[in-house]
Length: 171
Image 1: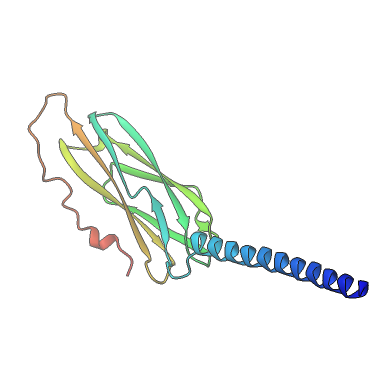
Image 2: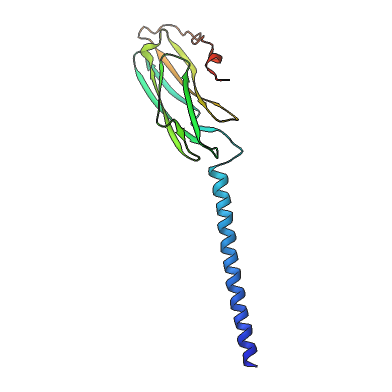
């Protein structure tokens, strides 16, 4: 009779160990799936820019301002940044990485020089186009906005950038 109690106890210990082992592995698999989904979404084949819009505020003509955008590769493959195009000569860019591995981030610095503005502008977004090799969305657009005041307080002229930005896009 004692041997039945020992066998039943051994079976109970094996079952408990098996249940604990399986519960731990299921949690690890679920955590791995969540990690892959949150960091590298293979259905979102693009470069993510954060933030998408920056308001630089109001400045006097002649002042310079800078801001940064974080560019993150949300694709499962390497993304190459082929070009960064600006819509105005008053805007210059600096890129930290031209090639981003899956999940990797880089920084796009934007420098705005209001001295290069020929007339007073109101809050008009200035687009910056980031051209990549991503097959689903090869152009990502971020924008900065700034109001430039002249020293003479000239009247507002909202007719600013008349340049055709469609020529900047890679097709």
